[in-house]
Length: 287
Image 1 (cartoon, rainbow, N blue to C red):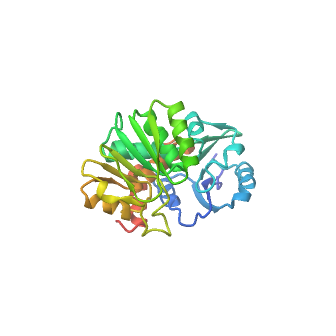
Image 2 (image 1 turned 60 degrees about the horizontal axis):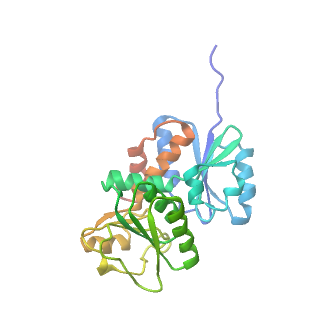
Image 3 (image 1 turned 90 degrees about the vertical axis):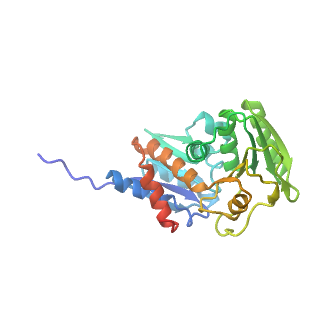
């Protein structure tokens, strides 16, 4: 007897506001097609006041998981049954996995960054001096993963002292790294001896694609590795760094790698990383 047909797609997606410019669907749908999986990735606009209802929808629709982007990465925590240790340490979740009836929170942002740093830039952060611009969700994920990987000193540069101090205290109390807060009242000079510089702010993200962080760009030296979390191929921030001889690392690899980690958490299958990267590159006009 032939098997009964199955027309039900497995559902995952992303909740955010704004979310229309989020390209994650491109790489996930390409991966599902490559592996012949009947899965669908939905890009869903969720206003902050509707997040609780949206998370109930994840359960009601039997979704396999969800990504969270701005402004939901912290706000989602009360609606989860479990938060994995690294994500709990960061205080932010970007990936939710349904395990039976339970919703489990994970954070793949920092892990995606670390894969791009070690695999693409071929940089081991152990013992390195790192400067991170920003103290939001991306900065928390990246600094925690850098600290756990053995970064020697992490300087958090942030305009809001309170938020920056919270992150520094977290790093100093919960990780082996030595962290300090640097004020950012105006243009910030990158300290001599910095090995890795990361823009973990939203400056350069659509629609602010022509903007760049306010730093003294002549303080960037050829020995530095300069990274941007913005996933557009070459931001003004990276252009300035490249002109000064620094090695640059864009956010596209980080986006692909964090997505590949989420893909495996949801499907149990190894992600076709090259297919995902190529799909995004084509969407961005790079292929």
